[in-house]
Length: 145
Image (tube, rainbow, N blue to C red):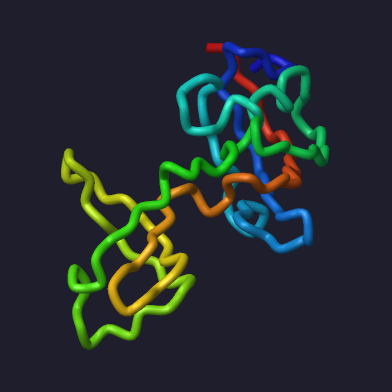
């Protein structure tokens, strides 16, 4: 065990991610602490940077700008499909989420943006893209790896 988070640490923590209006997106405060290794890709670099220098028992709240979190929305990630590609009986509405398969057959979530008689626009940007987030964290343990 060490007493400070470094880029070479395994960190055990609890966290909560909130939108700027206070809505909770994800939280581990009602569950066991999560553990991860800094730089393993399980957390965005912008979140990890905020942890550097924190010690076990330390709790903090940070603002995460879009460029340090889920990025800005990319207009190229909005795709237009023919309405006929969806089940004709389906009542498509903006905000509906679907899973699509990409070229590698990987599941890709998309949110319906607009629906007309002939076309459906689907947004494949992450739902938190472009959002400033509040990141609350409580460090439980730090281990040098």
